[in-house]
Length: 311
Ligand SMILES: [Fe+2]
Image (cartoon, rainbow, N blue to C red; front, side, top):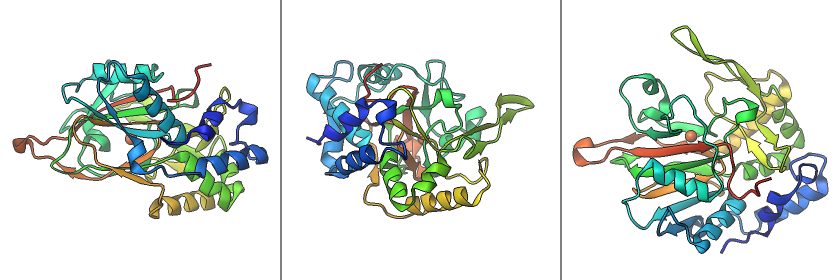
């Protein structure tokens, strides 16, 4: 079992006690020690077998919650591949406190997107709906501050013939590595105008206005850390000052290095990632429709987080 004392405590801190304020030295030092103890958890504790996703046992629920409190991510494997549906994803999320779905542009009416290669239409314009690689990002980085994505479920219905693995990295670990290097970098990355995403139009109709926001922010209610980031260089503008440039440069260096904290996961049908919107990539892939291999992942984005007490 993964030790959970640290992150349980962090989940229950109030905003003023949060270790993620640069002035809270003692709280940070204590949280950091406990966070890094036994981290990264060995691959095994990150993986949980689920017999019935509609009715988690208390042991399954406890394990998923504990792992997410420690590492902000878990990989589950369903006992039966009969459960490939958006209804199942919703039911699984609901049992973990994930209720408020983000109805983003590409999600279907029910708020859950089926990510697969799409040849035409609006989704076709977005890299997730292609077989191309996706670089490091958190989901919904272009959302406004009031609608940040707290958690994601990515459920694999079918894997690709070749490729399509994800790499995952806990933003709290990245936070520690940056604070160790230079706390001023975190101050710069927490500025309200640290990153700006230009507006998005379709045929002259504005779908999303230009938005600025911080990379790192702290939830006023429960003191949890949130990260918005994309490694894309197009469609993003960083605040133009020396400290922000250095901070982003250092962050990019970390992501380009082979950190022991990074997890590589290649989902098989019936497996999924459930996480507090950790940083992730997707490698390029090839489908083989004739051979029955067409990568399909059901993706649900939530404004809630896993493992947090509901206030
Ligand atoms: Fe993503």
